[in-house]
Image (cartoon, rainbow, N blue to C red; front, side, top):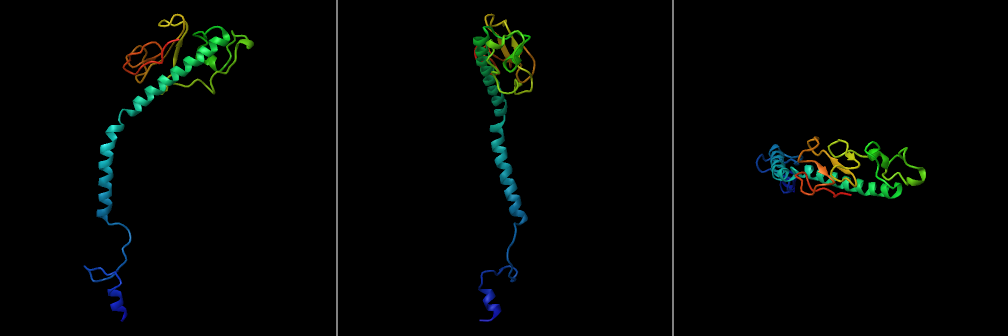
Length: 168
């Protein structure tokens, strides 16, 4: 069998052109098909993910408020009182001047007091207006404004922004 005959039966024969060639890469049509399929998948999945980020941020703020609440109660058990409004949540990481060294078993939090998921400081008032025997603790929520429906607090349980973590 000569080279032409062997080549004809090797399986690398292009039937359209009669010229054999090795196929390398993808055609434009194949690439476009993949792009269209990816676009369809994104169009189907993206609406399901929309709003999940906001819900996750609300859940994170609720968790932070619950954590701060527990930590504030630990501070109160050691110091005999909650931090004042002026001392704020910073009293959980740095000993306030008004607390004796023997009464402070902190720091009660690792690192600094974090901000809420919308990059605003958590609000703390003691004694609280809503919890006069304890403290009020809240995030201004997604809109960043106090006193709106999306606030996440430690005193209300039916909020548009989500349920609170409970009061002291």
